[in-house]
Image 1 (tube, rainbow, N blue to C red):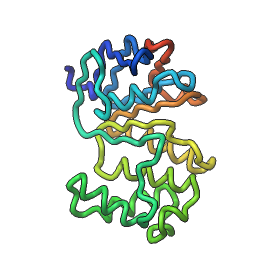
Image 2: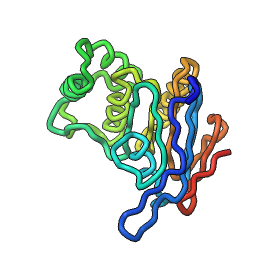
Image 3: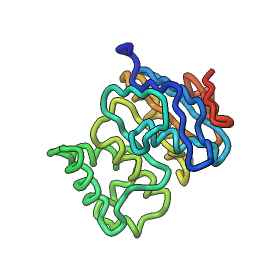
Image 4: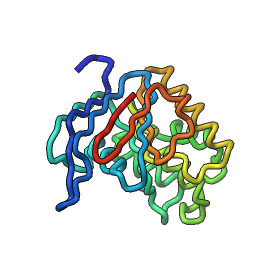
Amino acid sequence: MSDSVLLDARHVTKSFGRLQVLTDANLVVRRGELVGVTGENGCGKTTLLKIVVGLLEPDAGELARHGRLGYCPQESLVFERLTVAENFAYFATGYGIGGWRPAMKRWVEFFGFGADADRLVDTLSGGTRQKLNLALALLHDPTVLLLDEPYAGFDWETYLRFWELAEVLRAEGRGVLVVSHFMYDQARLDRVCELREGVLTCV
């Protein structure tokens, strides 16, 4: 695998019983790239992302990963009965990070919810929970960031901040993979891949 390649998935297949979801998915994410994966609802985008992250095993195919993965799932992984700060502490323990407070401060301020650090997650709006979901994916300074419908629930300001972040990560030589059933922002991306009938085609 080239030093510039962070993710390399080749000929990935996946079925659930008789339902064939992925028949030939090929995907490469390189350093300094913003890559989009689009397709209709239910076409297998989330399944592909879970395979890339390592949460699902493919039936066949090859996967190579380089560096630290940051994963922001469509369904939030946050703990609702913990505060925002307690969620950061919990995830930092899982990542083996000791001094996590500076990273928390950076991301809650970047996304504009610093005043909510001591609030229970179940009292937050859906948009703020999604900000927390994304901030936790960034906590361990990932080399490649994998995002499943990342801006669902974002207001316009946060949406713009998201793309500002994506540009910063690209400039730092990181990789960003954005999965969405619609892709209004193709001009912001280096490549767009479409998943159709189990086949992922990139242009």
